[in-house]
Each structure stands twice: as C-alpha cells, then as structure tokens.
Length: 181
Image 1 (cartoon, rainbow, N blue to C red):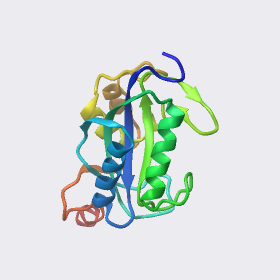
Image 2: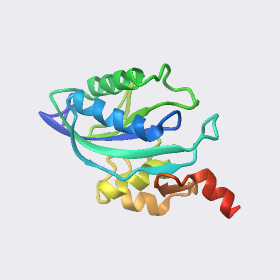
Image 3: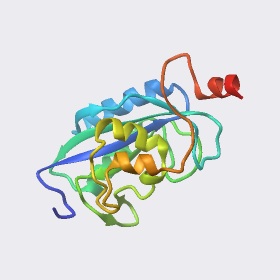
Image 4: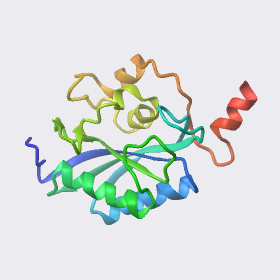
C-alpha cells in the first residue's frame, strides 16, 4: 500500500467529547463522517472516561468508528475530520482543553507515515485505555503495523489505569468515583 491509500481503505477513527451535550456531539460527529463520505462499517459502544493529559476534570464520552473511505489520502481524510470538528464548534487542535468533539485517525489501512499534519498509526493510541477499550470491541485481532501486536494484546499489557466504563445515560465516571471513593 502507498501513502495515498488504495481504492477503499479501512479507517479506524476515535471520537470523543467532554463539553456540552457529549452524546449529541458524538451523534453529530458520526453524521458528519457519513456526510464526508466515510462509510460506517461498525461503531463501538460509547464509553465514559476520565480525561487523560488534559487541563480539565470533565469526563469524556469516547467511541471508535470503523469506516471505509475511497479515493482519498490519509491527509485528505484528516482534513475532512478537522472540518467536522470545526463545524461542531472546535476552534483549536492540539490544545489540552475541553472540546465539543475530537476526531483522530487511529489507523488508515496499514499505512505508516509521519508529517507535521498527521502521524499514522496514531502515535499514542497504544498508551490510552480510552482508545483501546472501544477499539478492541471492534477489532481485537487487528495488528498494530508498527508494534506488530494485536490490539487485544496491547490492551492486556497496558499500564494506563484510568477509568473507562461503558456509558449509560444517568451514570457518570464522576458520580461512580464519588460513590466508590
């Protein structure tokens, strides 16, 4: 495979929101993916998670989408994701602040690349429980093209102990932590 992908590539996208109507933001982001010509193959469950490496205590809702996209490069796909983020109210990228929506390409086929704009596979996905839990739900035997390990095995070896629980409306990480703490 080349850096421009094939005629139809499988793309795994991480979605997250910790500002405003988090569930509504995820739904609008999925709709945005469809409108941007990403064909949704499967969606993980939604997970409520602690913010990691962020200047916020507001819990996230996170999920992963498995999509196919045809005739676009990874950079073009990322540009489409940025457009969705901005349409949903995100005005910055890279800052560690609360966000209406965050969309990240986790894998784009088996492409490995590193530019100022995009690194594939996502450079920190193997360190983050909030990404791996929903990703394992969709593709436990997917092999990380850099690490050479299956996603399920990477999750088993993970040292990140942050809270990641399947989301149920009315229950939150913060209320669960208060009840257990």
